[in-house]
Image (cartoon, rainbow, N blue to C red; front, side, top):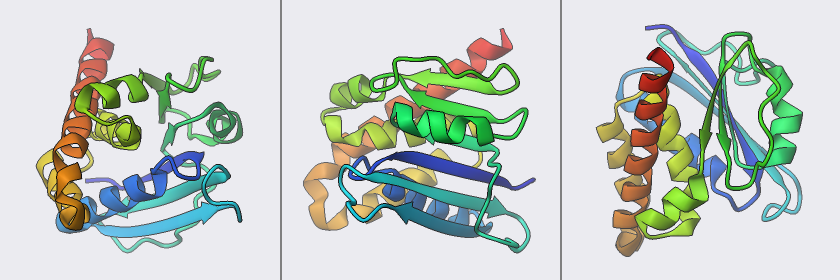
Length: 186
């Protein structure tokens, strides 16, 4: 299996660093080599935040990636900043709940996900990040969804009341990613 580099970006507090951590843990469980490199402004909540996750069957040479294979964006400033950096042929997953514009990339696959609405359907609007993670996993197939769910359950073990809604948000996002991929093949 080939490796990949995923950049997840949004405002601080939107959970993209957590999503990156969950993806990294799921890849490690699969026996892959992983790096997780967060970046955030001094404000944290409300400021900018992004994380790069490198997944490879071999040792990761550098955690810093200037041209990721995949981009998950929660907000328009993140799309504007990072969208042009995605490798040709890459994947861009966009949260349409907060990004009213289309990606200006005809050389990449773009998946549009109404993450906040789907998260609300799952029981918590705060899980939009897990919807986005689910959509990416559903499209890319880079990690096992059941393993990712185990990582969500482990992450929220001390706050068990949040597990069902967060798992549901991931599953609904996963379904959206799978449907988008099937639609692209048709």
